[in-house]
Every structure is written in structure tokens, then in C-alpha cells.
Length: 225
Image 1 (tube, rainbow, N blue to C red):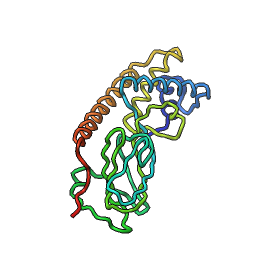
Image 2 (cartoon, rainbow, N blue to C red):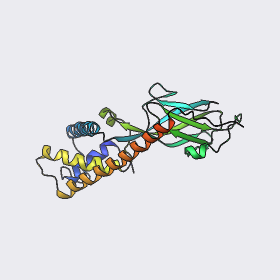
Image 3 (cartoon, rainbow, N blue to C red):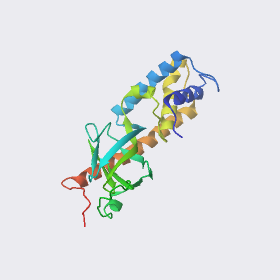
Image 4 (cartoon, rainbow, N blue to C red):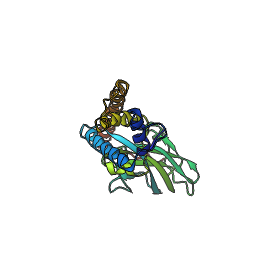
């Protein structure tokens, strides 16, 4: 289950005994912990350890083969590493891979809602390939790399397994401010959870690089016929 930044901060404080179960930190304590979380994420970013949050976006299609998403794209937003869900007013849009997409025959079915969507995470602009090629509005659930600590004050949430890494590592970071030594269990969980997302992110970066290499000099279009 994804949690908000405030929930993760409270969990971190409980894990080191700074607050009791059911106790609410003061506004100053929450602000100081939020500041520490921001510094922690900046440190992770400098090490290329990326954290992600989910965000909703809207794509309006007009019958074209593909649409760009990212800064300055058809969907002008932060570049997403992945699309986690998509839907239209008619229902769920099925997320597919390149192999499935290439089996579809291109056609412009007037009035038909979009049924499938393939996302190619090219950088700096990702490519969205909907099918059928029709006019529609698609609501996207995107996975965005978190680089700006100010985003923690919004209603954005962290998807698993990032909750563990933020909670336990923040707990270790907050210990000196409360005159405490990190409990051994907390310290161990901080290391193991951070290692887990480092491994996951490294695998995602390798896959994205492979896709970008494959796309060089290649035009992603469904052949009509």
C-alpha cells in the first residue's frame, strides 16, 4: 500500500521511539522531519538512486499513430518511467508491449474508444501508441521520478517497495536529532530496503537504455493493410 510523506514520517519517528503509537508529532517536528527527508532524497538523487511517485495525466488523441509525453510533449509533464494504468470514459485501456502492438492492424474506427496502449519510455520524450487510431481522451496513471523535495508536501504517494526504504532510512537519519542510536533492526532494514530499490532501479535503467538503442533509426508505426 502506498503512503503519503506524512505517514512515512510518523512511521519513522515511531520506529525509533520518538513518538508513541497514536501520538501526533508537533508541527515543528513534522517540518524538521520533512526537511530531513528532502535532504535524504537529494543525496539519493546524487547517487542516481531514483524514487518515484504516481501522477495522473490526460492524453487527448486525434487519430494519430503516436503521441509524446514529457517536458514540451503532447502531454507536457515530467517524463514518466512507466505507465501504470490507463482508462477512457468507456472503461479500462489494456497496457501492452511492443510485440502485441505490432500484431494489431492499423485502422481508424470512427467513434470507437481506445482499447490498447503501448508505452515506449524513450528519453527525453516518451512515446504513447494507442489503438484504435481514433479520437478519444485517455486518463493515464504515470510513474514519475521524484527529484524535487517540495513534491513531498502534496498529495503524491510513494509506491512499494519505496515505502520501506524511505521509512527506515529516514528513521536512521532522524536518530541524532533525538539523541538516539539507531536500533540494530532499524539500521539493518534501512540498508536492505535501500539495496532493494537500487537493484530495481538499475534493472529499469538497463531496460530503458536497451529500448532507446533499439529505437535509433527506427520508426514505430503499425503497417496499414
